[in-house]
Image 1 (cartoon, helix red, strand yellow):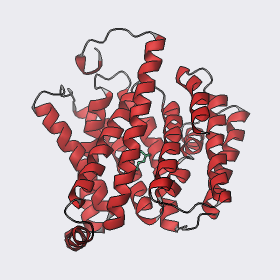
Image 2 (cartoon, rainbow, N blue to C red; image 1 turned 90 degrees about the horizontal axis):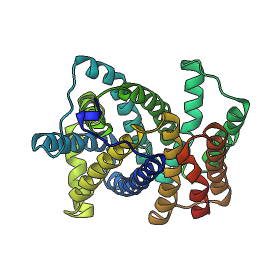
Image 3 (cartoon, rainbow, N blue to C red; image 1 turned 180 degrees about the vertical axis):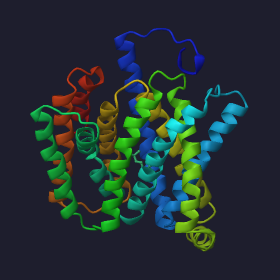
Image 4 (tube, rainbow, N blue to C red; image 1 turned 90 degrees about the vertical axis):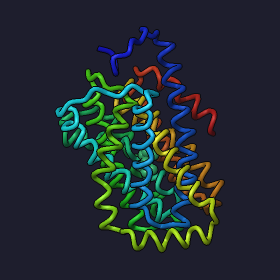
Length: 328
Ligand code: 3PG
């Protein structure tokens, strides 16, 4: 059976590369918008547990309505599907809330510089949890990734431990999420879009009680009133925007993950962070010292080297030199 039982014509490798290229570009653009609204909301309303819950709630609602009205064909799932989805949902919930807590404490660019080390976490997790070994150049490419992130962290003007640890926890959780997701989607009849929808619903159920315990309605009500007084009635639209864009970028990223390996996904994700880092520094006027920028550049260059030594056979990676040419 094809995904969600829909007939798909076979695609040539060029068409496949173009398709994944379009997914990647859309994923990155949606992610930039999400990050901007997410930070605007957190600046006015510093309750990351609630905002992460709302992102999942809005995404779940969008998909339930889409299934209900027949806009998207609902997936056929059984108990085993939801059982296999549980560890993915736990990892998604932890990674999501940890990243949001991080961004409530530090600049968006700092969170994403630390999150650009995700491929290093991927190698470490694959090595110690899955017993996979890699050629020496792969391990060597981790040196600039880890060193660059370290340099960026120690020279960050507004360093905050919770912000740093949140981004690190998010890295670890998302590597597990990607590995489990890819396993869960393999050979199954659920498409990337529907897989992510089910993931949102289960994560929402997991996160809600924790959000209430960590922050709770009392703080939310007072915080919301203050945010509306400070920002004006448009505040609610910022929350809607961050939630809708959160769902959309993740949905598109899962449509890509459906077609590529978890490690290629991690690399695409790191490249995405360049757009987020640059745009958030411009929009939020984040102060950056030259040595801080150097650390970020070394880390991202390390990821590029990693992709070259690890993935030279993956067609999408042939595009990466072009991305570098475009950015620098
Ligand atoms: C989140 O809120 O889940 C994070 O911002 C996700 O970050 P990422 O998708 O860029 O890894």
